[in-house]
Image (cartoon, rainbow, N blue to C red; front, side, top):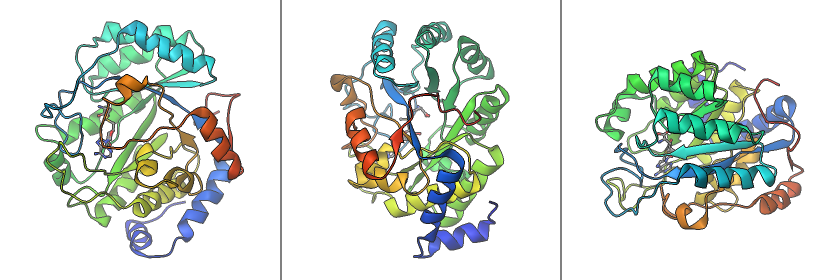
Length: 322
Ligand code: SAM
């Protein structure tokens, strides 16, 4: 479905929640009732960036930093694969310790487990993205965060908005299943700019979209700002589903962290993916992008999904184009 910017803004403004039902209908029609699980490994919380909202920003000196070794990463991936996960997501801050060679050998080892590999490691050069792809990476997640260039510059000191867009276009060119997304509720963000975010997802023809409500972290400059509105974030997600019918959309952890039923609400409003955290408890606590980040086990998810007539997909890798 194609919606104009004005139509999107009208839906975002109104109290009507019909769009959530429409998104649920389209989700069932285009991607079915199965839910794909992506097992997340947060392998380093070291980051050279200073995103104002993120607890891992380099200026936060209170974070205890860690890096997992290649064999630690592999062991977590192997356990995940043994537990039935068909995708392993490798996520980190922007940490240059992991050279291209190190990342490529980590990726190719994990690929031998018979899983899809998704990377979420930030902005890199075309050649680096190409090397990871050649090593076997299948997907890449890089949220644009906001398409409002002024807001982007305020939120990301010294970062380059155009480079972030270049990265997304390179990822598409290289044949990655490309994921992007935005934060909802950043200070100064407007409904107009959220509508532009959705139009950007459509223009990029993104294969995956993650929408997360902003949650203030007490050790960042945005600590006193209000958190994003969950219902608005779910609406942005639902509009994204109706505009990009066949893509993969996660019920994001930030949604569940903000409200106990956030994940199920998202899954009934267009989402078809969940990303359980496979990182060990010790390191998971240190990967605090925002406080009270929740996580759920496969078993808990299975039980909750059954309550809404959904199930975990276990017989395919959950690519957009089958
Ligand atoms: N460094 C990689 C990157 O830039 O894509 C991946 C790691 S980054 C921590 C993953 C995502 O966390 C970001 O895309 C951002 O949207 C989200 N995030 C960070 N701080 C957040 C906050 N305070 N509230 C909600 N989401 C947040």
